[in-house]
Image (cartoon, rainbow, N blue to C red; front, top):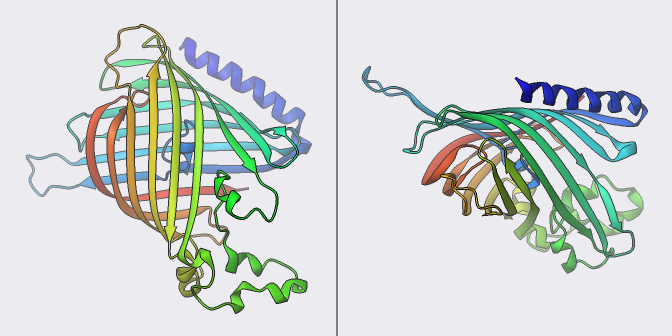
Length: 324
């Protein structure tokens, strides 16, 4: 109860800050994804898998992995404030998992270098009350991360592949329709299929580095995370279906190292995650999509009560950003 009161007090403080700067509010949104921990985990969709045996002697098994977030974005302060609820439960594997989390997250975007190549940091802090019903443990998690982004000067085309978060190449055929008619001679849609690099492939990647303190285990961890997504034949599929990024190949790696000498049974090491997905966007802005795909997981997650394990699964997932 003391931990919940702490979350309430901190939430009240940031709510006051929100109203103080409400003229700068540019966006209120509801987000759905896999895990709210950091920028790398947030890009993955929430998923649900279930088996329903016909036999009365065998119970239904399922896996649920996702978060629901209410986010306030204050553009004047370049600040995100959000309330989060998460559920991570899996009865399909031998290492059963059942973790519920509630908390808040604050993220701040800051410019470190204003000249090209520009450098940005996005530090973020999360405070989560966690209940692990398998291991009968509960308490606070304090998570601090930052992601690094850079912006190269226009014209440095090949260097832009190093810019996290953005697609390289861009959605060339789609983005032209949003430009003025004065650029008509540059219309990429006049080029034949296969003449643009984005017809063949697009690449996107993310990074995060930070510290994780699990209070109820008295453990402090270092975390370095990286994700890369490859979209083959993206422009060809746009020409046929008016949607980029339909086929997605994704690889995530999370490295953790314990920074104290506390004895723990938690999995602390390197986790690998591979996925091949088919994305169907439900909104033109591409911020809500249903994903059908296959995922292979090798590792564990001390924040979600997941012991070391390996498994593969077919799944249906949802990634959503609804603005109000």
